[in-house]
Length: 149
Image 1: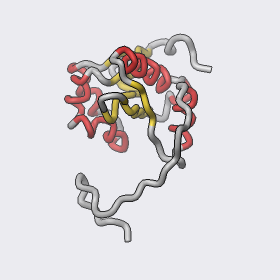
Image 2: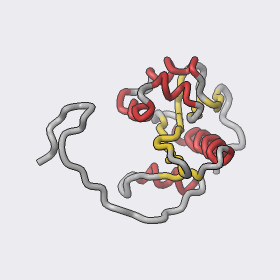
Image 3: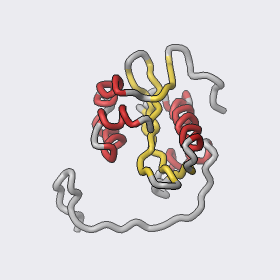
Image 4: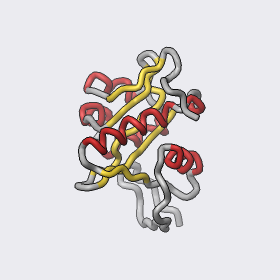
């Protein structure tokens, strides 16, 4: 069960423009979190992201990944150390409250093989609506890697 408050030394709050640098210090494998916003500066300024800070270091962040007219899809990353401290859940809860205040419905999309993501979604109150197969072809535009053959 999540704690009523984050542990000592941790603050959960909405990101602002001054937090862009903290986003750039996330491990490289987590940089996808700000990609659809056009980078860390744009996400930090967006008003659509909440993070858990341990000092000046971001240890969890949840943001709107895709913004529609009715739905906002949630994305979340957590650095491995504090995963059991429920900090991602605190960020997701705050983000979903913002979405509801904007009159939008939070949604959650993740792979069926993403057990941690599915468990976090469930704990945050999301329930499966449908499962689907996702197909793609070609090289990813951002990396230029060749498609698997």
